[in-house]
Image (cartoon, rainbow, N blue to C red; front, side):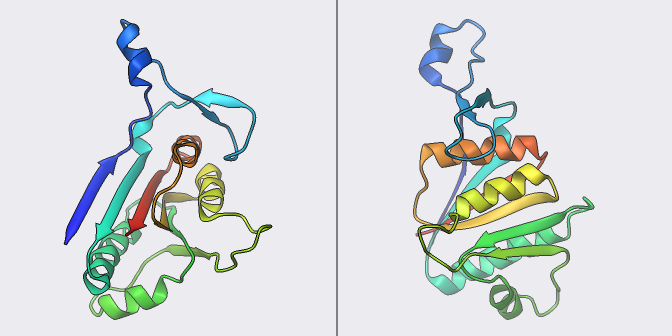
Length: 167
């Protein structure tokens, strides 16, 4: 089993090399991934990526433990789960002693052209600031543009984004 913990860097390294202060940030969308207006990222530490490469049972156990821990956060806001599958079966099978506390689920199991993507839903949830952490489960990789939009939305909503990739 391999778990990769990555923190996304959103600074333009080539511009930073030419800048003596090294603080040139990438310009990002304001409210949505395809938005035309841009603002610099204020805090790049708000997006954490986790890649789970293993057998499904072990990945589910690790994921359930992390989410249960996050649901017990002292912050009065909730943990938000954005995915194409519900969280309840995952938590029920792995949490005999602990019960989840304050988890809001947004399940998008419709894959049609007029349905928003999981990252678009996560951007909206992050911007609203009702959750201390928005955990979004994606299959595979997301674009750099989506990654930047998630980080910016997390900053706008004073929240953390946990991007979970199952591969």
